[in-house]
Image 1 (cartoon, one colour):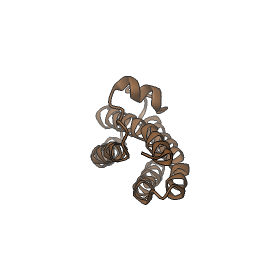
Image 2 (image 1 turned 45 degrees about the vertical axis):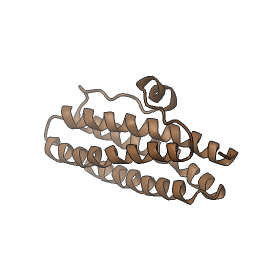
Image 3 (image 1 turned 90 degrees about the vertical axis):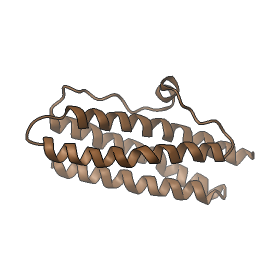
Image 4 (image 1 turned 180 degrees about the horizontal axis):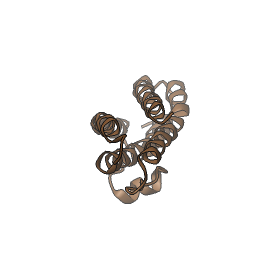
Length: 148
């Protein structure tokens, strides 16, 4: 494993951690949202967590393909990621805003790694991350449109 490969694998670990944290946050909103926004938020968050589950696996498998171990414990995810737990008692608009901010945070984490991977000649990781960036930017737009 080259130094560049190590760097990309290590950069993917926080992406994996925050993807898991975002999955849990999305589930929190899906399960606990109430009020007039219930139906659209419940439906959208179901689409989002169903999309996230295989993406998490893909990111972990990419880390393994690069020759590193994928972090897999809650403590590791907490130490590597910065997406906070949601408040199951928050109002629907606040939940949506929190979820939007989490997608933005993950997009901002991903953005510089795309260039890093491309510079290292790792087109597979760059492509994977570009696809993830697209998903998170779109999710953020959709969530923001709900509470505009």
